[in-house]
Image (cartoon, rainbow, N blue to C red; front, side, top):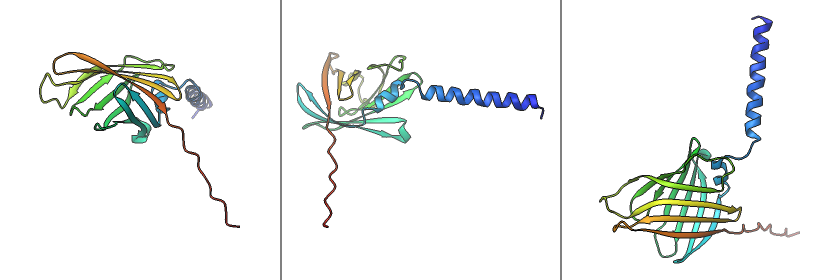
Length: 178
């Protein structure tokens, strides 16, 4: 190989590494911001108390939300990245699975507005199902979710969940017996 070929290859390698370092040092992506939700949360609604837990799964490529209202069945919502959009699949206690997607998101987003793409698992076309979700990251310890539901009668209703992060329990190390 000529010196010129080796030099060109070396320059390309340096440019690729510099680009990778530059991207890594930039602002967190919209999906990375959602990953900060990992942990346990308490939520209040007009109907009462709800427990919410966020867990990363699938090598960090999916965020799982477990939402358990008191005296109601648990529901799961999976958040995944799809290009510059976020896709959710909501496994609803109504027995169906609405899929919703955001518009194109910028890295500094704090409000995620999801609109309905399709609903899987419906037995009848007029069955009640979720049609929208707005997730607002107010600060590291406060999040608001507004879910929109379309009933069998075709009328839409919304329910707001005010989430507050649960304080982490301090680790206590027992004193040694010396």
